Length: 390
Image (tube, rainbow, N blue to C red):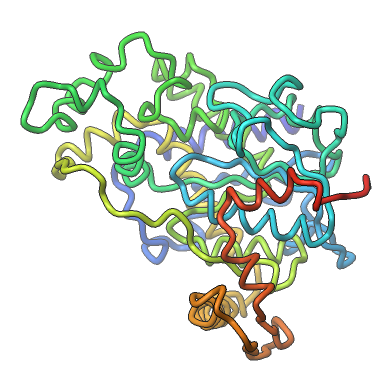
């Protein structure tokens, strides 16, 4: 009863975010920590927002005894910098010979449903240590395939930017075939005219991120703000961290602290940076506001977890931003060294700090960091990779 009341209070606070989100300016410096606490909801204060069976201790660490977290569910959201994050989890898991949930087709379990045995190469190997594949989130289904103490990490991108990326990459014909000088602007004037009866999980541009977070179709179809607020409250309870793509470094340094990982574990190279393939005109400011109204479910999740990220960071320690600066510096140094791969004959030493001993970067580390997602999938699926069940 006590927890249900807290959920109701949290949902009420999320409703306020939904109803006022058009006023948000995406700069955390615009908000005081007290305001962030109010938006996230006093229901979360002095209690865990996560599973009651897996509480979050004081500070941000999942395990207070110093153990590193090895059981991870990463919700890989399309066009949200998720490929870059995925390689971090692949490298971490492979270095420790952990078991991965392995889909039959590349790194996609499904773009329209959650996990089933028929979609997997190795269904009999469950429970798995790590999932980092495209799939629709469903907590009950995930729990059938993963370890009991799995930590849930998601990722989300500013919805308008994600929409532009999806339009460029997925190129939905029913938009590009609109007879108008500016088909995207015409689409945004009446999106449902063109989406028609298409199920939200079959569309790449109808609140796609919310769909991948498992938002029920009817909430999106009926544009039910109350039900959406309740669903975001549910996600807040179930996800330990949602990475904000625009603050990727801050998010993964926070993740490193939460999971008791090392700085070496989160070194990465940005993937899938591409230009625009098509000559298209993206909407003006007015049309961007139309998109915010249309993508209400995406913005509900993004606005909420954007604020929540900064609250979590505020609990991460006074030295947090100093570590972020250190991480940015050594990551760039590593990138400069590794970019000539495979023509590497020496090593480079990344300076030590209070957060990490010296890191020695050689050809082998560059190889792993510079592997594309497809390279990791081939390796994990090959006979070269083996693991022992934990």
